[in-house]
Image 1: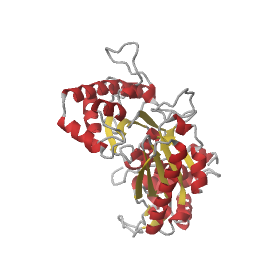
Image 2: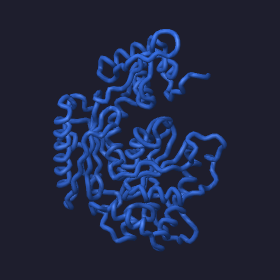
Image 3: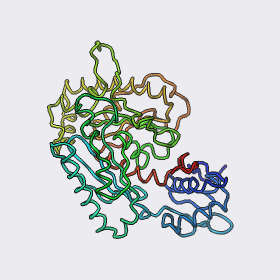
Image 4: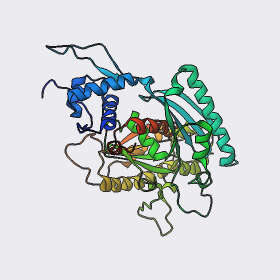
Length: 404
């Protein structure tokens, strides 16, 4: 209908016993769309005006929502828009990679308030966890200096590190950080911080970041291919991050994406398509602090060997995109990761044209089957920080079942 704003929101339920779900529905609608009036929220969520009013008042009492100045729209009483209170909640994100650990602290709407990193010692997790806990302590002190009341509103700590988790390995595979996975890391971090801690792989964390601040914002079906030291995919299905039976869904780096010319000794995809593979090609140290600048400069300078590598990666990823589209039917696929912007953009260009798949249709939203997402060494840490926010406030079916 003309004159009515299009609002993206999930459907609420007016059945009894679903208050937790309806709270999440309201918060999600405000996060995705910005400020909305009660009438907007009722129309978008399908909740009754009375239910919307009750939830708005409850969220306001909890310090999660506040009103803006009233806006007159035609005849009748002016509408009062409501928005999320950024200081209503805070969360800590921690990324643990092969050579470095990063932590960020965000507020309810995803603003980054604190950002710190530290090199991990070569002695493994027993020494590394000491560095990690010290980094988190410094980050919390920095937050307290900005917002003294923030500690009372910390909803948790999310941890992102390379997977897969819990599989049988006979040696410390450097691609998988097996020694770290076999260490009681989550217990030590929970004990050392006093916070609820949740672990996810770095690709899932990157997908969470894309959903909060990037190209997956407002989408219910998206796949984020995370191009980092290794390669993985974060799966956003039906508006929720899908982890699989053992939190290992999306480990596409382990698949064998065959291209013409491959022999029987073909290696897993991430051995070809990853920052580790590129560093090996360029003879760069992956722990080099200026790695992004060095890779950016190398790509801008170009050269036949580097172009051949990108062409090979693009061909393997082109086939991977077609498989992911065929299996999951996403709205879009996003190439993102802990990689320089120029590399992500060049790979997206080279992957085109895409192979035919079920994703080809006349009307699409978004229009692009494949697009570039966040390209930032901090994206996994940011997604890890978004996980406790999502776990606490995002709509999910388990909220209706009262399991969260």
